[in-house]
Image (cartoon, rainbow, N blue to C red):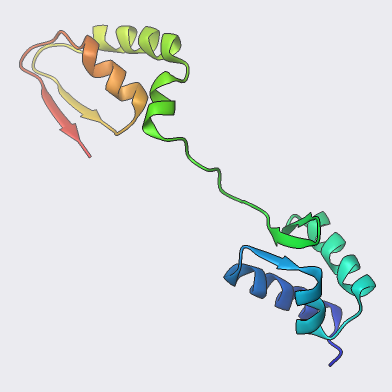
Length: 123
């Protein structure tokens, strides 16, 4: 079963969307193409930013960053967060409404709010 290049590329990306990693042999079996053809396809798809070639096969290129857990976020840039939080907290006055999003920086802000009679809305 020989497949034209575009269809092969689509097939490779489709298969990778279902599985974290595909070996070169799996791709050869699925497409019926030679190892050299699959290697060229993987090189081209990597150039296009569609996948990452790894030893023995390929995996989808991560388009999203892996988010750090809260403990890591709380410790990251702590001095800067405290400085920003102090400055921001000084801008908050009595009888104001404050919208606070979730996050380690806004958590730091809460520690420094001195204003009374404020309305705080969170998500």
